[in-house]
Image 1: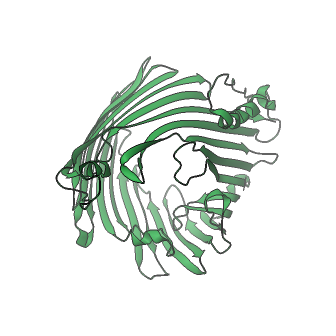
Image 2: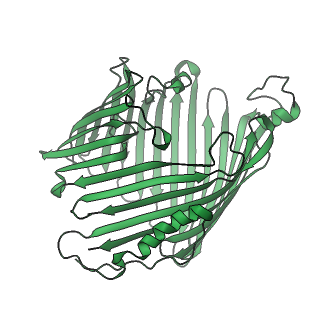
Length: 461
């Protein structure tokens, strides 16, 4: 195996107080890693150690919950950390930890001064030739029937041969900040025939147990067909054995005749409450099932031009119909100055209101370490929209009823965002963002962000 040289390490950065200390701990660990010297693997794959840290210092305006006619400022500071290693002592053995912390110094409204959570924390093993794999710890399970389930538990996958794929998982679903109840569990599995070059067909089950009962159960069928080059049909359908009845389906048909063109059609039937457990209060507010039919055409020239054109139709049954249309041409340049500039025109219509969107965006890198972006987005409403701020200014005592639409509201909204970023070293980047929003709730809302990111990846014996 060819030798791999450890990357040069970052020597400058920013970070607020104690949060920065945590970030620099990751950087320092990379600095003193044994892999700084050149190494050559002698037997089996080398161990890869990697990590990243991102510090976000933000400023934002919020409406005062006690008086929506006034605005307050919050200054939360976030720290996102990722640390991991592959082939740790044994080929195929890996670990990863990912989490965040937040400091909220002002206007907390019941929030803690400091909070955080472990997002991912796993120990994984993948056997030679991918015959089987196992992951233990806090993880996101994405089998078809489960959707996206965060759990503290074990997931296992086996490929016994004949293009068969077997999966199973089980564990506790955690609350924020490491809290969980013993009876709040998730479990499920999948069996599939998966010859990748031809397609696949799989059957999966997902269940959740909460408050002494089965709170969610889903049986799903997923499928794909790839018999013609550039042509693919894929989709899934779900059934609810607990409540009895068809739940959801999503299907797409795509064709890519060459590297420049791509055409796709899609159809879906969705139930907003289907992924929620029966014990969730949010089911009270999400009961509108709907159909969605759409098409998209994408074109990328060998040169600088590109284009996306899409449209979708929504049917909400007795609640009416809606549609979405969009057109987005782009221009890309390469060479000494790399840039992407585009225009997006969109139209969204529902049974109660609609808007037309006009957006201009650009990203330019005048130098290999420096990047600038500008994004101007405008929304023009069919019917003027009232906001809490405008309503309270007109009626400070709240004597009249609040109406979402009607006279005296705003007929449009604007969002303008600007970004400046510089690569201070290999793997290290400092970026500043500022945005101003004019909408029914804010006549002028400023928000800002200063972000420092650092990521490293190195190999050791």
